[in-house]
Length: 185
Image 1 (cartoon, rainbow, N blue to C red):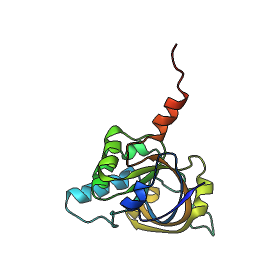
Image 2: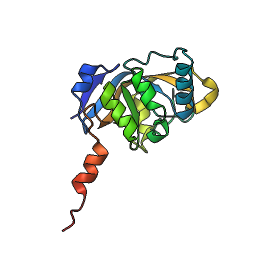
Image 3: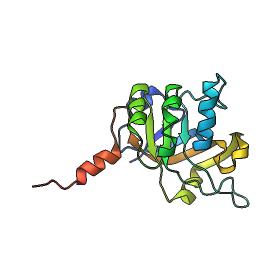
Image 4: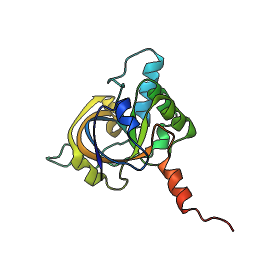
């Protein structure tokens, strides 16, 4: 059974989430990949504001395909999260509470999630054409010249994700590997 979660994320909501929990997110998420992350961290380093309020925000590591006629967005599947690991700790320290993508995160990112209470959520890889049905509104809010990597604001309803890394240091990928690891005799 999936837990329904309203965005933006709060510490109280995060305290109730554990690795392996299936969630349905409703509210606003932002999309950004490596180029947008680099620009956001550069802005912070220069003392400039970000294009959105990062406190409590969730970023989806995704670059959509072009929308077909009559659609608001094309396929919206996750990209590999590790490419954002160089930037994620800084954004988490600034108040980012959720990240959505696929693949494992670095130790530095996982440690920062525990320290600042943030979660990493896994999206359905290879099913971007299905996930887009949860997206109700799309708006480019910054870095339009980056094309698919532009920073977007998405309004989502019942967007399906699974908690991979919780605020307690849990790691669904590590737990899964350990569960099925063959013990040497």
